Length: 412
Image 1: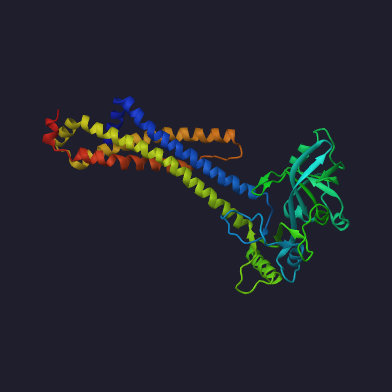
Image 2 (image 1 turned 90 degrees about the horizontal axis):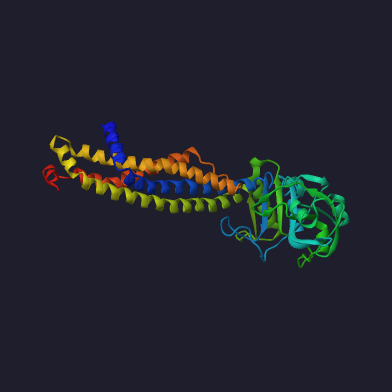
């Protein structure tokens, strides 16, 4: 019975080529939109996840102020502060035994000048352990060392983006003199290309010793302690990150004299927390894009219903004749449902091809987005096609099966 219905369905499609083509076009556009937009959403999710790989390994981030992932991200200006003393407290093995490295970081926007060239970039004042914590690779020269910090040396390590902004391609930057906010510094190292992370372009940066930052910025608290933008803590063991976060929280609450039921004036997040926060945003984006594409499928489904109603009207005598020779309601119902699903599946097939082409074109023009079409996407599109055909084909099929054979045979 099913094979016979399929044969009749495709014979009907062939008999009305233009009408069938226009009907399937709506479904094809809808399916193509679903596949393309979902691939974009998934590509954005994969891109975000890849950006976090550049942050480092087993890192926990301590920010001043209190916030929640997904509510605007890390705070900008806040009355709460973290200080160098907080970093020293977290580096105490008696307080935080699961910390392998504790790295204070002060980040500020500065003007960097070399000769007649200048650029606005971010300076990162930190300690020598920052390179290991963030998995930086030195392309030439060296990273800042302990002696630089002890002597408050005016030395700098620059990233590739900053390098290209202030030095000519054939110019040797290593050992060259630059100015940061008008203060002279000497370039002692060049960072290898790292790329972008959720915190910005990692190559558009200048790294200087943390102790030297006092000559550039007035960042001391009322007690004379130096401020930090954030503190990076690297775990000894990735399986003990939860214990590390608890130790950091206890140590900072004690240092900040926060009462038992008082709210923290800092936020401790693991890499997983940051990834989850960004993934929530990209998941909402994917759902939103899928919903927009779904509207196209609904429009295509309405087109199928319209054509099937016209088909029922045109084939009223045929339906009456079939019923007169013994066809039951179920036979007529299944015939028209199969025809509706066949229309939808043909449109879905071409929609899958068009969607794959759209995803390929987006990846070609935006290489950062991996818009690969997965088997799940194809199965989802096929399922949508069948569902649309069934949903919008039910009413015409029921209407056809309910026709009286006598009235149908008399229909003009």
